[in-house]
Image (tube, rainbow, N blue to C red; front, top):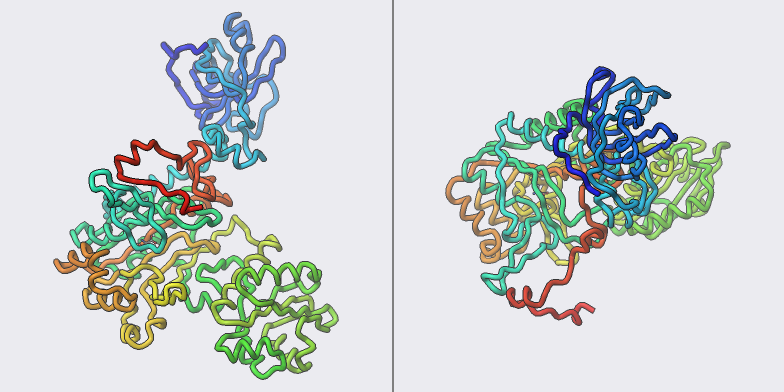
Length: 597
Ligand code: ASP
C-alpha cells in the first residue's frame, strides 16, 4: 500500500550527506537498491540520482511497525526515511561517496511498491539492448545512464552561459516548416487545414538562422532538435540535437575563435580536460592525402603515402593500370605488423573490398629483411626495394597498398588505418585530439543525379580565389567550409555563407537549379537577401555525439534519454504506429500499402 509523504520533506539527496552531517537528523527518499536482512538489523542501500546511501533499520530506533515495513521491502520500492546520520558501524566502503556513514532510521514510509524489474538496475549490465530499450524508464535508473544525462544537462547549461556572455541570443525556429537543404530525406507532417500539403520537420535551422542574420540579430544560437530520414546507418538517430549558431559580420576566423573557446570551456569544466589552443588545422586536401579521410583520427600515425611515382613503370599491372586510368597507388605502413598471420591479412583484404577496393596488395618485411608479398613476383628486386624505401619500411613492418581511383584509394586506406588501429587497441579514449578541417570542396559530383551537389549546402561561400573556376571547373572550387573533428568523429561543421545574389544565382546554376526552382524552394531567403544582408557565417555541433565522446561511450543511444533503434522505431512506445481511419480521413490520406510490398 502506498503511503503519503505528508509531514515529511526531503532534506538531502543521498550523496549530499557526508560525515560532516554526523549527529544530524535527515530525511531522504529514493529507490531500494539492495537489502541485507541480518535478523535484528536490516541494511538497505537507498538510491537516487546522486548515488547510494546506506540505511540501517534497528527495531530499537525505528520501532516494531517500522521494522516490519523494512522487512517487507523489495528492490525498487520507493521509500522515505527519516533518521540520524551516524558513523558506519560495519566496514567502510571506499567505493562509495557515502561509504563511511549510514542513516539510523527512526521512521520509514513505503511510498510505492515495485514489481521485480526485468533486469538488475546496476552499472555495466550485460542485458540485451532490446530489453533495456523496451523498459527504458528502468534502464534510465542505472547510474551510468544517469551520469551521462547529468553530464549532458551540465554541458547544455555551460553552452548557454558561455554563448550568452559572448553576445549570442537563443532564438527558437519552427519545427513545422518547409524542407531545408541538408541532403537527407525530410520527415513530413500532413496539413489538415490545407489538404494535400505537408510541412517538413527541419533537417537543421539553416535557413531560419540566416534569416535572423538578415533581421539584425547578429549572433544567434539554439540547442535544437533536427530530423533527418536517412537510410539505416549504425549509430544514427532520426531525431538528434544540434548546438546551432550563426554570426553576422563574421568570417572563418571569428567562428573558429569563439568555438575553440567554447570547446575549451566545456571540456575543462565537465571532464577536466585542457584543450591546447589553437586547435590544429588542416585543409581537406591534406586530410585526404595524409589520412584518407575528411575526419582524420590524429591520435596515431600510419599515414598514407603516395607511391604512384615509384611504381609508375613497374611490372605489376594492377598498379600501372590504376595510374593509366587517372588513379593513384598509395600505401600505409602498419609498423611492427609484419608477422600478421595470413588469415588476418585476408580478412583485411575482405574489409578493403567493403570500401570498394578490387583487392589489397601487401608486402610484409620479415625480420631478416626478406619480403613476403602478394605482388613480389611481378616486380624486380630494385622496384621492391624502392617501394619499401618510399614507405619507410623496416624489418617487421606490414605494408598495404591500394591502387584505384583516388576516392576509392582514400576511402579504403582511410578505413583500414582505423580498422588496424582498432585491432591493435591503440585508440585511447582518454586522449582528445581536436582538428579543424578547412577548405572543403564546394561541390561533389553525384553520379546518381548526374550533376554537382553541394558538399555542405547551397549557401556555402566559395573561396574568393576559386570563384572564376565556377565557370570553368566547378569540381575544383574550394569552399569556406570547416568541420571540427574529435578523434576521427565529425562533431560539428559549418561555413561562411554566400550573401551576394550574383554568387548565389551562379551557385544555383552550377547545381542545376533553374531560377524558378531556386525561388520556389528558397525564395524567402533569396528575397530577404535583397533587403540588406550582413556577411555571415555559422556552425552546428552534433550535441549527442559530442556528449558521447565526453562520456567515453560507444553509442549516442547512451546519451539520449529515449532513443530509437536502427530502423527508427521506439521499442518502448512502439512508435511509429498505425492511426485510426478517422485521423487519416481528416487528412484526406488514403493508404496504399500494396505498393510498398
Ligand atoms: N546547418 C548546417 C548543418 O546542419 C550547419 C551550418 O552550416 O551551420 O550541418
